[in-house]
Length: 258
Image (cartoon, rainbow, N blue to C red; front, side):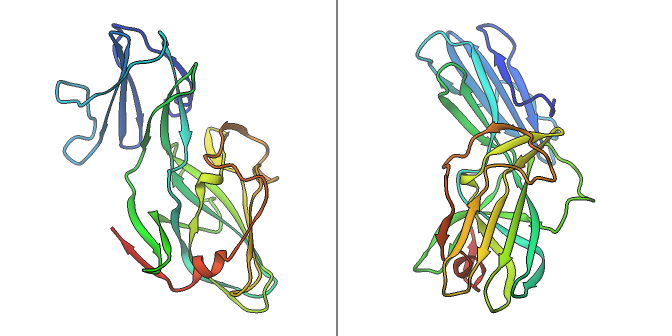
């Protein structure tokens, strides 16, 4: 199921509900009296395999036309994600490293013909947090898994998006890497060898008081191959961003989970 979940499906009146599962998320879709009905449940310790029954709560949509095709596609979370490092690390001047983080995917359900999005459902429930200071900051999701130097010994999981990031220190001082705010809304999603991948992010640090260059390359790293683009960025950026990224991302700023 995990290999073919990202596809187009036919939903007709009177048919049994389609069932999709992704990690602990279970989603059912049916059509009744011309309306699309969608219900979701998350597995827990008491109910590892939720089923559809009279207790299900359904959200309903009346399509503009008699549409019968829906599309299930992967998308990134709708807020930036706070990612911590597996180990605190200092980048000396001139150093360049590549790290990888894994972001839980959201399942997008849309009407195929009109591309109207009915629901976006996270495969994993993420806690929200405030990143920054009490005066300046933004709402984000808190990621429990950590960025690491490679994915060699990591188990492949269909609900996680592998995200390659290259960081270069072009300043004259050390850069301490502990955590960062990852703006995933600017990334596309690729399918490669039955895994989900994001296009590579490149960050160049010029110093605490200088702007850093952040660019989403729009492609996978060369050593991985091309892959197949199956989801475009929520907020596409066609050029690099010059921002004070590392002052906000790597200083000892206030983070309080909610």
